[in-house]
Image 1 (cartoon, rainbow, N blue to C red):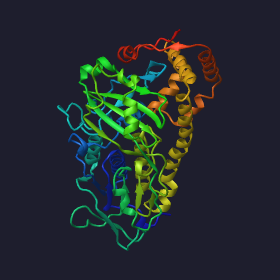
Image 2 (image 1 turned 30 degrees about the vertical axis):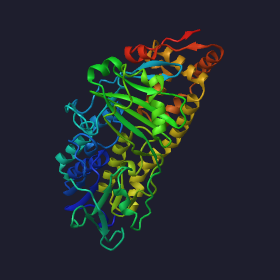
Image 3 (image 1 turned 120 degrees about the vertical axis):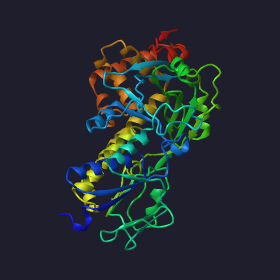
Image 4 (image 1 turned 45 degrees about the vertical axis):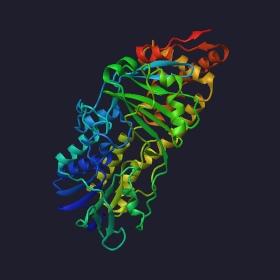
Length: 469
């Protein structure tokens, strides 16, 4: 039975620190569920960024790829993302390795990649052509009744000095403290200082372990991008130590270079950008020095411990997210689970532990499998014969029935985050997949191959043709 003072009632006040996807999703679902049961709740979203302004002040430091599966889930919620927000021109990805390249078209018709900008664009944006994805979600929350306060929270205090069922939190975002809130929601990500506000208080929360990544924008112009990169997201499996994943993502007039790995630093970035495989994707004369905007955000490699307590809960990245992929999808899942718990079950630590935390655990458990998936991917990257085998198997699948493209489907879901890691791993256990992979490994060990021109593959959208020499 939920204690009377640890549940939301008419007139309850909720503070959400962070107005990115997790904060906006939580606010939207909390108010939507409350409205359905005639519960009147006031929600304040504290977000200092202005998502209508280009550059760092309106950006949430993210590669900006969402899977079609997430778009469909949002559509089922009645959230139809407009074409001014979601660019649907990316219908394939091109896999680049030192042994060759291959374009992989969408394995099935409903699997596509959606590219979004978290703000309106980089700092040198010349013309706003796309709406901010984060701004759009924030607008939906406001239309549902949330109030956005464009201030940074500086201090949190509790009525009795510590988080408890009896005391309520107060926030200071300017000179004075706010009125007391009944529930405090952290949706700050792992790159904001706001999540540290609880560390001076008596809580069991431990923030996620993180690693540094790299995101950089280059202005090329829509016509040049169409000629050089086509309609593909370009993914790289290169034998570069510490590099887990790298991609070049076309977005309107810009391309986004995204690197994930073990504490990505400038040395690793330079090594990647100067490989022939990367340079071949850009037009002649391109220089890595001509960047428009760049950042080195941190991302989770583990989930938080005890991301809840009496009257507070952590959602999104500062709680748990998927390993390397689909952070926006994880924000949606955790935010909805937390909002549902708060309205229907209560705002006590026990309520969140029983009804919210299982959603976090499911993501964490799948991430354990994801670590193994990326370990195997790393072993493939480090061995030339396995890279050749994967390339050969994938290239041959492009002329087969899409339903039988097993390696293509595994790679697609691994790189785009369209499926849980458990589902991806189970596909590789099929007898047909194993037999085809072993056969291609055997051929790769007994033949020498010459890759085709990277430039042609990057531009033309045709699958690579592997030639013997």
